[in-house]
Image (cartoon, rainbow over all chains, first blue to last red):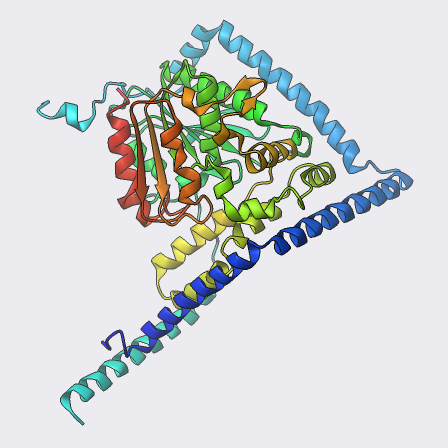
Length: 128
Length: 360
């Protein structure tokens, strides 16, 4: 094999590695500047504003077409979510009240669990 | 021509021949790459113990004949999927722990629904984590639970441990967990309060879209993606490299949106006011001061972490109230600390030895 100094692939890899470091370092400097921070803040704000304006427009359009808007579907989802939450609360309550039933169910349906008796290697040395 | 020059010439010829062979392999495997399905990840057998909105609690089926008494609950970062800890057999931390005799649970997240935009720290710290801990206790029959938090999952675990400092947490392990948010220089600049209107963003979009989260991570090392694609092409002949690339690339792109209110709180309380470090953090009116944490704690940090720089993670161990505490700085980056060949050699054995001594 060619040594590292003359191996063209090795030189290529070194070049790539150095380039990546330089690019990342240059970018870090640029991204760390106040100017970038201001620009990013403006862009995020503008993008969020545009999204909101478009959303408002679509809502009016869907209402005109007699179709549910995203917000209406979200409201519906929220109501379902709230029902789901209440069901979970009821299930939790039932499980707490009938812990013995849950345990016996688990024992009947689940695979047997291994015993919780394992010791760390430092304590089990010499154990046969 | 001298003997040395002849030898160098023939070695260059060998190298060229090798590169030609690799170029042919690249072309063949390149076609396979684009034609084949993505690898199946997170496939260690598990049961869903509980599911509620964005929250999922899994129990991995034990594989050892005898297990440690204290179960482990992983708390995954809210920005990414938990299968980073369970990639494929041989590269799965979960599988490793199961084989070592631990009983493993995971609190993982799915994308919050639009109606979950109002979720706050209060929901994660005072509801989701305690609910999962309670279910782990119920399922395992044990009172004690060890908690392992990765990245922001570590922040949530710390908040939980600070507030519920009288139990039932037995041990706390944090992987690359930031405490001093002033030291996350680029994130600080991205969220500069003079220019970044977090209220306008959250009020407009509800949940913060995953693209914004992904791009924020990508911007920390802008050249990395292009370079990794060049590396992928160069190593297309190498099946192991391609397999690993696809796994990590898929995971990195599988970024989750963040609940709007949670993002607002993170920005204001942590990025702007640095409340966790300043010990002024409260969640639902309850003080979350990490000096109140008394349980044994291990903090694993990565030497070359570009997301959570060491300076941001360093104050954790110094500021917790535990007497049994240890920080371990390992080679690697934010992700390679916990997953991949680097983690198999470094973090995993350390985790096993530290935790096994404290799990009986």
